[in-house]
Length: 356
Image (cartoon, rainbow, N blue to C red; front, side, top):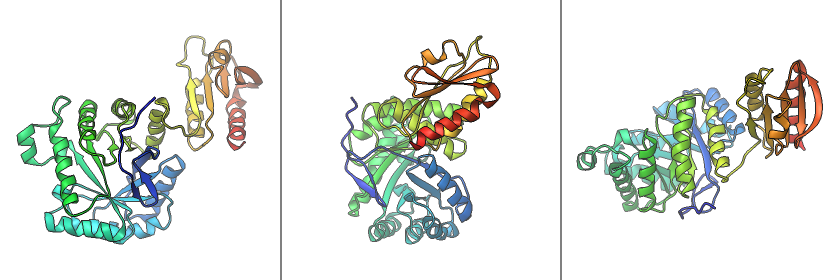
C-alpha cells in the first residue's frame, strides 16, 4: 500500500492538485501556439488520450494573445510556459491562462516578479516553480556543484529560494518541479525536496529522449518516486508526438496500482511457435484501445496452443495460428476466425465491450 506524502491542495482552473486528489497526468503541445487551430487540434487529441492538464509555449505577445481563443475551444485547464519575460506571463493570464510555469529567479528581478504575482492573484492563477538542472543560479552551482544523484542540493536550494520569493509576496498557490535529465538525480532531488515543502510536486525527467529512452528513464524515476508516495502530477517527456506520452504515463500509474485508465494490454514476446504477424496485430490493438475508457484486460498472443491459457485472466484476447486465429474470453474460446479477418472482428468485439 502506497502512502502518499501529504501536500496542500491547489487548483489550476477547476482541477485540484495535491492532497488526496488523483495524481494528474499532463503534457505540453509542440505546435506553434499562435496557430490556434493546430494547437486546439493537438490538445483535443491529448484529451481523448487521457491528458488532464495541458501546457503551451508562450514565446511572444502574439502567442499570449492566442490563449483566449485556444481556451474557449478546449476542456482542459490551460497553462502558459514562460521564460524570462514577465510581460508575457502577465499577458498570458490576462488572456485566459489558468496556470503559468516560470522560474521566478530569471523573470527579471523583484519588481517584475511582483507584477506576475499581482496578476496571478487577480486572475486566480496557479504558478509552477519550474527548476531544471540546466538553469540553476550560478551562485548555487558554485556552492553545491552541478546536481548529481549524491548531491542534488543545487536543484533543491534553487526551488526553495524561488518558493521563498513568492511567499514573501504573499503568494502560495504554488506547485513545484525540479527536473534533471538523469533519472537518479531526479529521484534524489525530489526526495530531498519532499522533506522540505508541502507544496504539490510535479514530477518529470527533462530531456528524457525518444520513445524508448524517454519511457525507460521516466518509468525508472517516476516509478520510484510514486512508489514512495512522492508526486501529485506528472509528465512523461518524450521526443515524440505528445499523445505518445499518455499510454506511458498511465502505464506507470497502472503498474503501481495507483490509477487505471482504459484497457490494459498483455502480449507475448513471440517465439518459434508464432505463425502470425503478431507485431502488427499488437500495434493495431494498442492504437485502437488508446482512447477507450473501460478498465478491461486485453491479451494479444501468438500461439493458439498456449495463448488462451497463459492469458486466462484477460477479459478478451486473440491468439494467432496458421492462417486462423481465435478470439477468447476469460481463457475460453469464443470464436475462430480466418487470419485476414481476425483483427477487424476482434476490434469489433473490443468496441462492444467498451460500450457496455
